[in-house]
Image 1 (cartoon, one colour):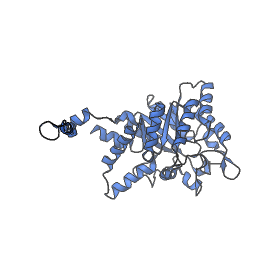
Image 2 (cartoon, one colour):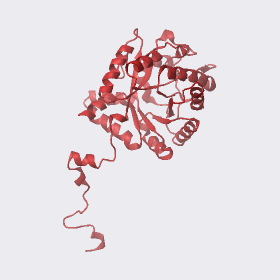
Image 3 (cartoon, helix red, strand yellow):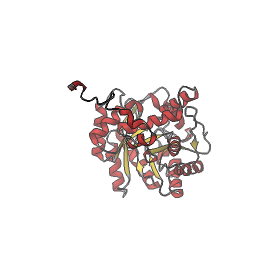
Image 4 (cartoon, helix red, strand yellow):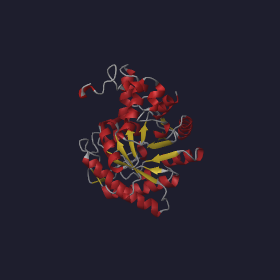
Amino acid sequence: MSTANSYFIGQFPATRLRRHRRFEWMRQLVAETVLSTNDLIWPTFVREETLSPTIKGMPDIARFTIPELVEAAGKAQDLGIKVLALFPVIPVEKRCEQAREALNPENILLQAIRALKKAYPHLGIISDPALDSFTCHGHDGLIKGSDDVDNDETVQALCKHALLQAEAGADIVAPSDMMDGRVGAIRHSLDTHGYQDIAIMSYAAKYASAFYSPFREALGSDQCLGVKNKKAYQMDPGNAREALREVALDISEGADSVMIKPGLPYLDIIHQVKQKFMVPTFAFHVSGEYAMLKAAAAQGMIDYEKTLLEVMVAFKRAGADGILSYGACDVAKLLKK
């Protein structure tokens, strides 16, 4: 037998990769990427009683009152979801340029954290000290002059907001604002006040993305922001090396884990971050990504459940240790089948 044909034994071919694909148990046995409910974080919206529960751009997602949120959290735990990320919906009349409601110890977010921890002491709570829910202009920070977000003044407000969240019972503080130096400042503030064990999950590479629109509608910040954008502090979608610099800085300042947002358009960033830094790395399957799946499924173009699972596996394959997804409960139900 010639060298060129030495790998042929009997019938062509000797190596058949399909052998391990014949049965479900066999495919599971050799699976390189495994998805479980341990990988899921459910982002939820909490609202005051006077606000509408409906989010037009996010089918099947609601803005919960605190009692509704507590009930929904119980159902999520029954599905195997152990962690919630909370986002508050603040009425327009309570918003202002200085985001004063964020520092109100009785604001809806802090009430929700306390209520969840009282009902479920072992439920993981992630909260975000960003100010976009609380500002009348819709930016993640405090405005300097006519348009610019004041980095350093914003960081001071973020530290106060993060401390209130820790005091309320948050397990992880996840700053999404993209201000320079905020991770180090928050870490110092938490440590100084005796919260050394509260982890920081940094939105280390958060891009100025068009995929956030349904989220901004859910918060009510879309009307506040208007035609303005957040490109002066969120990242340029074309930049990859800059993302690695952002991650490196946040880790050096004390971030315990990092997040890439959005998810699917930035699988390459997730992969590079995980390979280079080997720290816990999370992907945010954002509102626009979720909404696209729902819209396409409603038109009969895709199967929502199958596509959702495929997306989740893609995040894991890229290197994500965990995934924030509005479809987390749907994924959990599918994994139970």
